[in-house]
Image 1 (cartoon, rainbow, N blue to C red):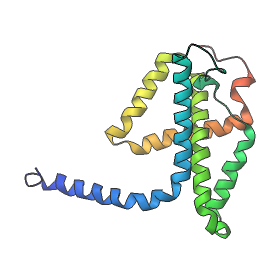
Image 2 (image 1 turned 180 degrees about the vertical axis):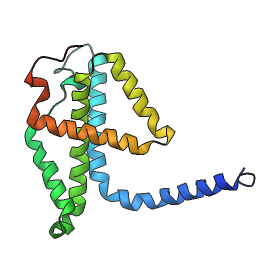
Image 3 (image 1 turned 60 degrees about the vertical axis):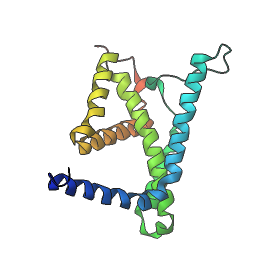
Image 4 (image 1 turned 120 degrees about the vertical axis):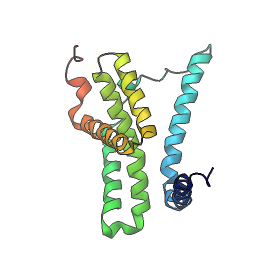
Length: 172
């Protein structure tokens, strides 16, 4: 196949080279990624438990629309940004990146919850989610990164704006 299409073989080799260079850079981010994976696994296990068990132990997980956490955790994001950006904290830069990734993902999830709260119907949410999931396959990764950035900004804005408690739910 590579003999018939040298351009595709060249692309495959370039992708393999990029993938080989990725692990050393990503190794320092293992704590943040492990924390996010652990939270996802715990949420999945708790949801499955409440789906399958006859005896209830505690409350089931809330919906994405009601997802929130302490507003004081914004300081972890500020500390991570400080460690990642300032030259005087260069030895702590890895910790700063981990804090930014972990809490950035939490704030993105909070922002998605607010966007879900604003969406008029579940069908609208599923349609938007379907489009967003298809974008990377269409080669539009920068658009996905932009949407993730918007979700982080909306989630951070909820720390000060408290959008869901300001008034009644928007009407359609």
